[in-house]
Length: 147
Ligand code: CMP
Image (cartoon, rainbow, N blue to C red; front, top):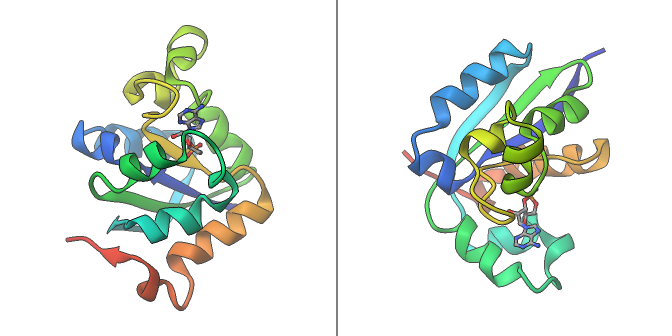
């Protein structure tokens, strides 16, 4: 029974040229990349995508970070894709990832609690919402594709 999740390589991941290594790891771990595109987010995109975090103290930094350059968004597919992608990313805090999950993606390319290189949906409900945010019928109205 295949499941889909949304993965994002954040601006620090693209800027540090980690995309190829991240994709290689994704394939090695048995995911297939069903969709992918490079997009440049604006402030409004980030506000809506991360709506659940909009009242947090780190939110304005998150907006600055996520709009600082293009991001690569992908739909990953496999059995248990949501949990398995989160496990492969490692803990949100990249410092913790380096200490406790040395083989995780955040250990490889993240820096700290904010600049953690990758994102993954946290539940089936978020996966559905996040996939349609970027790949739904009206997605071209919401995000600017980047070449
Ligand atoms: P992500 O898993 O994409 O979900 C929300 C993002 O907000 C998170 O990764 C980090 O990039 C950022 N974030 C979460 N918690 C904090 C925090 N305490 N301080 C700064 N940034 C955070």
